[in-house]
Length: 387
Length: 182
Image (cartoon, rainbow over all chains, first blue to last red; front, side, top):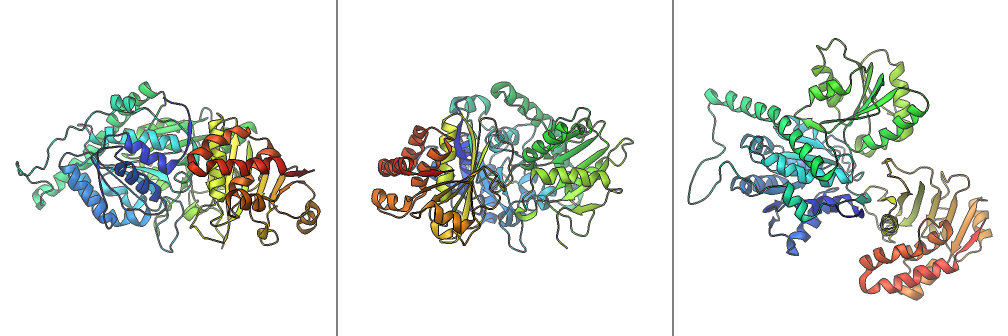
């Protein structure tokens, strides 16, 4: 590894893709992802990598072009955000059903309306049931590392599923911070060439993504579900390989100061870093508080979560999206459902916060911990909302 | 950790300032963040940008509300934007202005540490444009001693290429001429 260099994280995401020997990128620019699109386009244009950059007219086309290119056996990348991801929505389950290892970066941003370009997780949550592997990065270094890991995970013979790496828009994409890049030789050593299961080729015609009659559709969907559930084993294996080669550990569920903690905060994405400072301060004040960070959202790492929250009496879930008219935030709803039968499950307090760029400070986390302690039930709350 | 808030107008390069300062800090082996007040770009409108610089890895990713240092790139913002908002007691205000410190203190009702330099004048002479963003970095370096002066060399070379030398000269002039008053 080289020395730490300063770089904007969006640019670093494109640089990481540039190390991965891609064949095709089809990216449509959208704030706050634009710097990824622009810089990756520069990398291809300047001849730094031998790849095709398809300038598409929309995100519906970028993901479709990626699907087509991936079906020929190419290594492909796309990136988007918010409305762009919503526009891809129709194609996402097709990519996973066809078992095409497309790798995507998503610069998380609020979904309209009203129009808002700032960060939250309302764009990724509606894609939850698309059959993609969904991961969240916490800082710029993780964006670099996990982008590279994504190709190996997606293309692995035991996985063959598309992956989306979430990086919080602005909070990560527009931040200049110290980063370490692996060398090209190191990435080559880690990331083997793609060996496709089947390829489209004019000389050897075949059909992919066929029409399914009712007699086979259920089986196809179950196969996708099984593939996604089984992918966790390979994801963990590849993360272990990364740790062995580069020294930085990645786990489906990360913990921070959870030992002896009876109350834990649970986050996804960049807020975990700010929350960790709140945990430091609460620990200094003698309060047994820990932090749990979900890195993997799909497949959901239930066993790892159970281990992480052992002994926890109150789990405070930070949700950055809402299921309107439902049970609250999607993360808390999911965790409540999965732990429903667990006898010793913690009380789950759900805060919906950090929507559309609303800043969440260290003090806010400390305040939420105090509020959670006073709450009697498990109803959800819009933290800091003005009424 | 030192937290800096920059006030400028869209197009005056406040974001470039925080980028250069962050890159220089990282070049020195420190940890740093440089980021804009997130949102659409608006030429001419009051904008803010931020730096955090630390000896240790920086974990906080929220905004900066209680800066140690406030830098004002455009003197016309004084009276329009509350530039001392949240400035820590014992903090430092660095202003691009030709006016005497006393005038600014009276106008801002500010008694804390103050550094002033006529960066627009220097930028006009050295760069031929009234854009004071790189020039003001010189004033910040002198007044805060947060980084070594030479640490800016590489980021400025990288960013400005053939006009790097003129930017460095402007920065040095601000470094030498900034007036620091307790």
